[in-house]
Picture 1 (cartoon, helix red, strand yellow):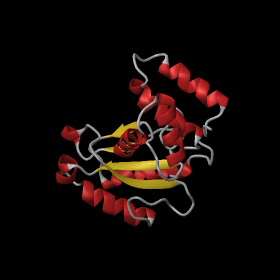
Picture 2 (cartoon, helix red, strand yellow; picture 1 turned 45 degrees about the horizontal axis):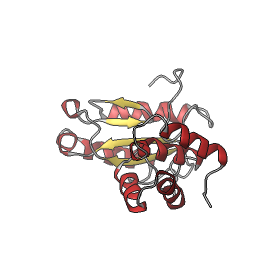
Picture 3 (cartoon, one colour; picture 1 turned 180 degrees about the horizontal axis):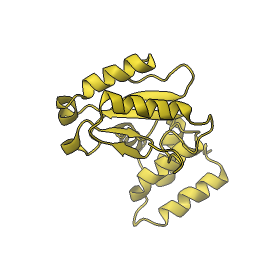
Picture 4 (cartoon, one colour; picture 1 turned 30 degrees about the vertical axis):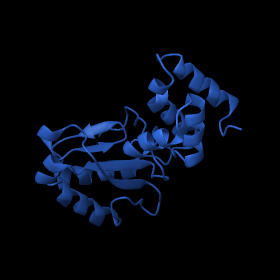
Length: 177
């Protein structure tokens, strides 16, 4: 018995139809599983994706745990993801992370008590020439300073409780980051 509804299975089947093989649909299928899971990709959902795509569960879990875009635990409404790879580290990512931890009163990997913001260390965001890089939802920021992140945090905190945003989705165009 699948943990997915008939509607979700139809979404997965439509996705699969766009790809030459079922395996090629793995990343978007995990995205669907996370979406219907309320922003969290749990072990049962990974197992269901594996079954539906006829893949070994360990392969699906390996992919899901490799990418930071898949949330294995609940996150805040907004995730501030700071790259901590070598170029970003060389240009101040560790200091930026420490600054955010102090400003938000949490450690990297935690969510503020109000559930609004999750702070996360992530691997390469692909902006090595403009380090340090930060991602919030689908928006990227480069050459981020403590002052810049402070302004972003103020803007995030001022957004409504039900923003046009999922932990990995789009922030509406009216938000001015």
